[in-house]
Amino acid sequence: MKCKHCNDTGKYKQPNNEEKFERLVDREMEKAYFVNYAMAEEKAYKEVGYTLIECPYCQQQSSEE
Image (tube, rainbow, N blue to C red):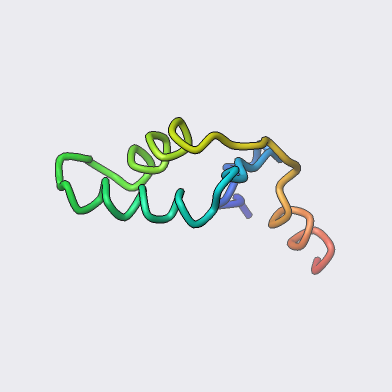
């Protein structure tokens, strides 16, 4: 099953400021000129920065199987 959080890369972008990141994504989505959620996320990541970590969702999925 493909991981929807990391697209099976095993790496996950964790925003440096989660609260600000969520606000920025919401604000960009409201502008309506973004085609999809991924574009709004990328712009928010650029503004708040991120840390690349091992995907916690893949690890949970593999331990459940």
